[in-house]
Image (tube, rainbow, N blue to C red; front, top):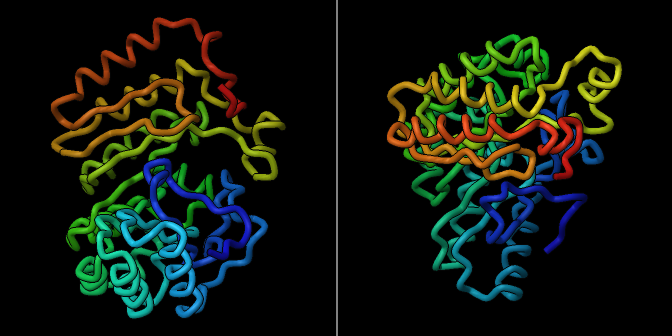
Length: 291
């Protein structure tokens, strides 16, 4: 397989075959992200993608069960092209059970519900979507390029197409000043979407990003470990009538807070309360990704 630059995938795709159907990210302007800065976005030729699928078959055999289509926002591909890739993938790997990709709300919304349903019928089973926040002030601050309303609309459309939706919430990305609004309005958005998965990621300022500079100059105040846990608790407390699976499947997080909503809601809050009893010096530095 041919890979251009660093290739990223969600932790839940650790056992997936990874094929680059696109290179880079078409937005690539989020103030917290440095993942695709060295790449110029492009959609790879379909024949190249098919050749890489053939190569993956030669390497892994025909029994692969999971496939992840990288890079950022491969959902942007023309629907007919993405369907051609999906159909060929299932031809190459007849035992495939899951094919997933990244897709943020802005690029999901460029497709109609009918197109998403066609993709589901062709075998797209899950979209990983970096919501990050449901608060419009935070979304503007991080330059996400979408609003609360657009996030909700796109998320509900994915659900209506019967494609699994994994939404990502970034703990602490609003800093101390916007933490409460960030948690409450994000819960409000997620309540309206009811995604299959809600995945927690804790904000860490990354070198080379605008938010790293804001942190270094003191314009952005990072949440302490206890403040980040309190924000997570507030998020969970404001969930209402949703059936999502909440997961803390990333090294950036201070504590493993996981469970099924609504039945595990109180248990998750109790787990956070237990973590809050631990001295903050026992947690990692808020500005460091190293545990």
